[in-house]
Length: 322
Ligand code: SF4
Image 1 (spheres, rainbow, N blue to C red):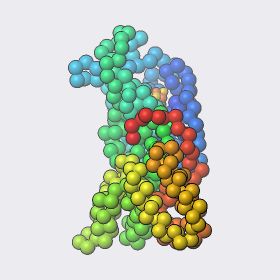
Image 2 (image 1 turned 90 degrees about the vertical axis):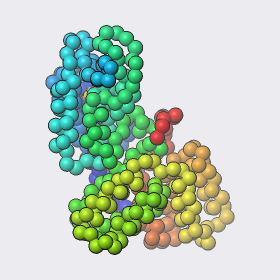
Image 3 (image 1 turned 45 degrees about the horizontal axis):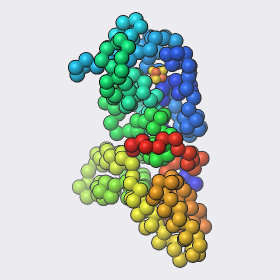
Image 4 (image 1 turned 90 degrees about the horizontal axis):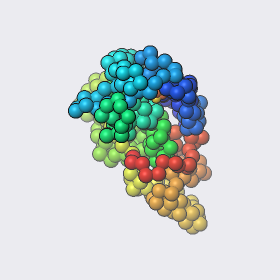
């Protein structure tokens, strides 16, 4: 079993940590609760930070021409400047972070699907986009994981999120050491994961590690980190995961009986159809890795990219984009 690093996450405070919503409520989130023992959370409520108080009159994003502002219709207050100032100050002060989980659809925290209005009077929303704090997070952190709690109810998005936060936390540990042997080990451990995510980046990362140009270790590590983050930025395709799984089957095929293979191919088909998460076929492979004492595969993060206690197949996020 892998020893996992502790991802550092920043989370909207109203997601179960404090009753800081405009109406004095909190919104507990099962996944965030379940993740708590494995990560370090830092919570934030941008609206409270700019002094709006609890409870408070709600605010909204107003779009006039190309200009967005953050307004409180009941009081006529314009909190655009204070929110921008707070967001930039807070986000610039963060040195170690692997991801964000922000409250969906909030005019402050939302990362997408936030309603934009033409004015402060009662009216229909005319457009959707990120909230003010959510937008600033994207501007400050282009290469880490930024999600909202709504999207994380979809198991494919959740698997990708978990894979990324634990991979990024692992990378942070390696990056600090500045050692070529740690870098080589990291690359070896992640070979199959990278093969599933991006063959092109895998090849490039292999060249960076080989360092034929004899660059200083500092530059090699910086280059590697940049491309590693890029490699795992987009969800791996089902077909790529299946290709990697089929490739690893070769390590066991002689030791498996017909029924085991048939059962496994059935699970793989269900994964292909989107009926079960990737963790389902991977857990079977993991049991074979132990049974056949397959040392090379045992070190591959692809088979256990995050703690198995976090695997679950419940999914209430049908129809979301990845
Ligand atoms: S969505 Fe963000 S700003 Fe609104 S209550 Fe939650 S943490 Fe505070």
